[in-house]
Image 1 (tube, rainbow over the protein chains, first blue to last red):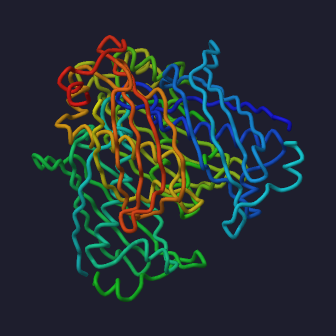
Image 2 (tube, rainbow over the protein chains, first blue to last red):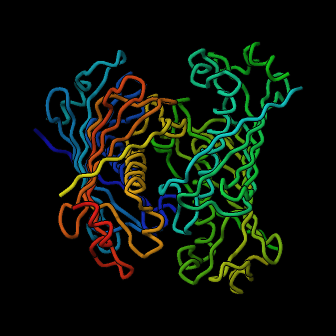
Image 3 (cartoon, chains in turn orange, purple, blue, green):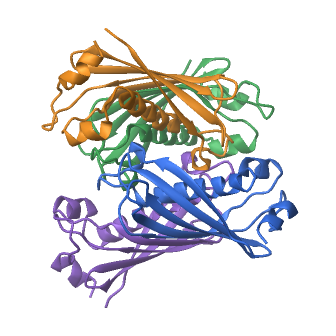
Length: 133
Length: 133
Length: 133
Length: 133
C-alpha cells in the first residue's frame, strides 16, 4: 500500500496555551486534524466535500508522545502520513516540528473508521482508496 | 414580562487558563451557555429537547465586561436572567461570581434568535413563551 | 490619533464547529486575538516580545455581532483596527469576512488595559505609542 | 504499589460538540484532566496547591480509545486510577462512562513527569508519594 505524506503549517495561538506557559496537551489533537485535512487536500480531496457526500471519519484511537513543549507564537509544521490500515480503517501518523530549527516536538497516531450516512462503517470512496493503494 | 433567574455552578478547568495565568477571555462564553442551559432546566425545559424538536437558539450578539480574573480551580456561580426581548428575540444577562467571597468577576449579555427546522426565525414554543411572559 | 489597520487570514477548523453545524460563537474571540497579534506584527511589534518585556494586555471588554455563520473549512479574513482609547486603554475593532465573496460575517470590539510586571495598569512602550498617535 | 481510584462527574457542554453531532475527540483530554484533579482531591491534595508549591505535572504521553460517542448534555463519570510508574513518572488510566446506563464510552491513559521550579524532573512530594506506595 502507498503511504502519502502531507505538510501543514500553523502558528500557536494564545488561546492554546495554559498557565504552565506552554500549549495545553489536548490542543495538539486539533492540530493533527489540520494535518489530516491538508493531507487530504494535497491528494485532491476535501474533507468538507467528503462530509457533504455523507461520509464521516470519526476517530476511534488517538495517541500522542510529547517531547518538547510548543509555545505561544511558535511556527509549527505537521507532517502527516495516511494509509488504509484495513478495508474499514484509516490510520494516520504525525510529526510536529518547529519551523525554525526543525526540532521534533511531538509524534502522534490516530485511527479512523469511515461511516456512511446511516452511521455504519464503510469503505472510503473508490477514487480515494485508489490513491492510497 | 416576567424575568426568570437561574443559577449554575462550575469549577475552572486547567484547559481554560492561558499563559497569563488566568482564564482565557473567550472561555467565559462557554460558561454563559451553561448558565442559559441551567436556566432553561430550572424552567422545566431542556435545550437538548428543544434542539430535538428542531428549534435552535443561535447567538446574534454577545458582550462581556471582565472585572476580576477567574483563576484555575476557582468555584464559580453564574446567575442568569432571560426574557423575551421581542417576538423573535431572547435576551440573557449574566453575573459571574466566585462562590467563596461572592466577588463579581464579570457581567455579560447575549441575544438569540430562535430558528425553526428550515433555518427561519421563529417564536419559541408557546409553553416556554408563557413561562416568560 | 492614528488608526492602524491589519489583516489576518485563517481557515475554520473542525474543532471550532459545534453540533449546530456552524462555528461556536465563543471561538470568534480566539480569531479576533489572532487579528490583534497580526496587527501588532504589521506595526513591527510582537505580542510575544511585549510579554517577554513584562507587559500584558488583558481584555476588559469584548463584544461581537454575529451576522452570518462561519462554517467548517471557510477561509476567513480579519480586518483589525487599533487605537489608544486613553492613556491606559487600547481599543480594537474587527471585521470578519469570508475570503471568497467578501461577505461580512461578524463585527466586534475589544478593550484592553496594559499591565506592567507588577500587575498595575501602565502605558504601552513609547515606541509603540508613537505608532498609534 | 497502591493504586488509588477517584471519580468525577461532568455534563457535556454545547461548546464541546462538533458538527458531527458528538463531542470532539480532543476534548476528552480536558475531561481526563478533571479526573486527575479530582483523584488528587480525594487523596487530600490539590493540584492548585501543588503548582503553588512549584511542582508541575506536564503530560508526556496521552492515548484514548473511543468506543461510543459522548453527546451534548450527557452526564458522564470519569473513573481515574493513578500510580507511580517509576521514581519520576506518574501514570493514570481512565474509564469514561455515561451515568444513566453505565455504558463505557472511552478508556484512556496519560503519563506525567513531575517538574520542579527549575523545570527539572523531580519526585513528587514525599507525603503524596506515600499515599501512592
